[in-house]
Structure formats: C-alpha cells, structure tokens
Image 1 (spheres, rainbow, N blue to C red):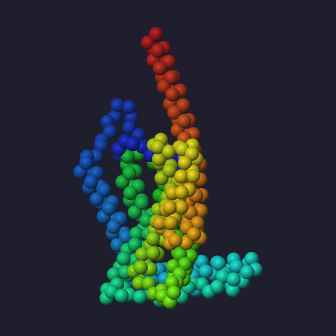
Image 2 (cartoon, rainbow, N blue to C red):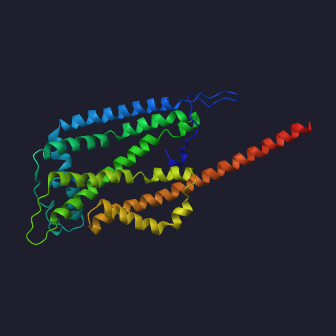
Image 3 (tube, rainbow, N blue to C red):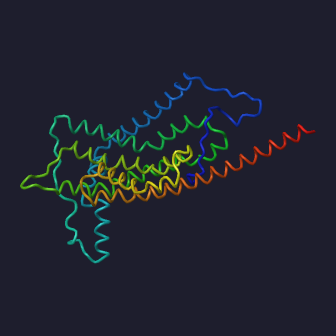
Amino acid sequence: MPLDQIDVGDDYYKGEEPKIGEEVKEMGFLDHLEELRWHIIRSVAVIFVIGIALFLNKEFLFGTIILGPKNPNFLSYQAIYALSDAVGLGRSAIGELPVKFTLEAVDLGEQFLTHIKVSFILGFIVAFPYVFWEVWRFIKPGLYDTERKAVRGIVFICSFLFFLGVSFGYFVVSPFAVNFLAGYQIADVETAPRLSSFVNYMVMFTAPAGLIFELPVVVYFFAKLGLVTGDIMKQYRRHAIIIILMVSAIITPPDIVTQFLIGIPLFFLYEISINIANRVEKKLKKQEALNDKELARQEKANEASKEN
C-alpha cells in the first residue's frame, strides 16, 4: 500500500466513528499504562522465546550467520566472483576473499556472554514485525474505521524496509567493511580481533541500516504533520547529502568505498521521500479544498434556512 494512503487520527476511542450526539468513552491514564504494559510484556516474551531458540542453535547462529563474512562460501563473495567472471576480469583480479584472520576470546566468560548478547539482538531483529505490530495495536484503537483501513499496510511496509536495511548491511556493507578492517595492516602487526569486537561491528553494520531504511515512513508522518514538504527537502538536498555522508562514516569504517555503499541507497531513499512528501502535500491541499467547499456549502445552507 502506498505510504501516502496512510492517515493517522488524533482522537482515542474504540469502535466505529462516533455518531452525532454520541459520547465517546475515553480510557483513563492508568488504563493506558496497563494496556501498554501488556503490549511490552508480550513483545519481550516473543523476543525472549526467539532468543532462546537461537541460543540453542549455536552452530547455526555463529557458524552460518555471525561469522558468515569470514567464510569463503559467503553469498556476497560468490556474487562478486560471478560478476568478475561475467565481465571477463577473473578471480585473480579481485584476489582471495575473505581476508584471513583469527578471532580471540580474551576474557574467561567472553564467549558465553557474547553468545547470550547475539541471541537476543537477533531475537529482536527476527521479532521486529511482531514488536511493531504490538506497537500498532496500542495505537490502533485511537483511529476511525476509515483510518484503520487506510493504514492496514503500515506493519508490512515498516517490517519490509527494516529487513531490507538489515539485509543490505549484512550482505553488502559487512563483507567490504570486514575485509577492509581485517586486511588493514601497519608494519608487522597481525590482526587478531576479539570476538566481542567482531560482533559489535557486525551489529553496527546491520541494525542501524535497518532503522535508517525507515526514512520514507518517517518523512511521510512528518509531512502529514506539516513539518516537512517536498520543496523544503529539495531546498536542503545538499545539506542532506552531507548528513548522509556523515551518517555513513559513523556506521562504517573509514573506507570510502564502504561509505558510498551505504550512502548511495540512503540518497535514493531521500529522493523517494521527496516524492512521498509531495504526494502527501497534494493530498492535504486537496482535502483542505474539499473541507473549505463543504464549509461554504453549509454556510449557504444556514443562511438560506435563516431567510426562510
């Protein structure tokens, strides 16, 4: 569903649109807190269950997913080799991927604690659609039926963009970043990073990318509030490019290629967001014109009734 069809109301009530003269029963502050508490409890419970399931599959969790960029059979490396062969360069032009390095666990409980940490971080990533759905269930009772129908696709859209960002960070950013950092050498210093350091970098390459890819949704809601317009975003496009490069530099290592790998899709997301903001602005102006027309019609009807 297009983002410009999403419309969020402001009043909190349950049921259908209130009829004329009908009182709307509002929930009290403590009722809101109780409702929010159960949404949080259910979300945490799902994350916990998925985290335990991942914890029990240690070999898959680390051997296949976390340490994937260290494996020569990693999908990204195979794609790079295939592309190199297709353009006639051959594998010798690229060299051996990935760069070989050894991970170390210095502290006594580092492997165990890292195992727990990774399990629940991935548990949250996997459970993101459900967590967002719980958030949406908390907001949903405050909408009219027409508004609920208009936002039916919001959970799918946000989940899709989040997983798209995480996948991009995992399959595109992390292989280049890991090979750059592991292959960077000063004199005779040998790279042997700690396990916890490697995991922290992998989280940094993936989770923020998932959140950054939510930019079109954020721009949509800001446009609905009148805080952002397409013209404003076009006016500050150059500033946005600088901010995008800064964000790319923060979440990636100091490698110009890797920074552009995440900067380019961010720029395309910014351009898509401009289009979304323009569509929302046109829709708001159209709705405002219809409201003015209806108001004028009602005023004429009131004047006619007074004359009669």
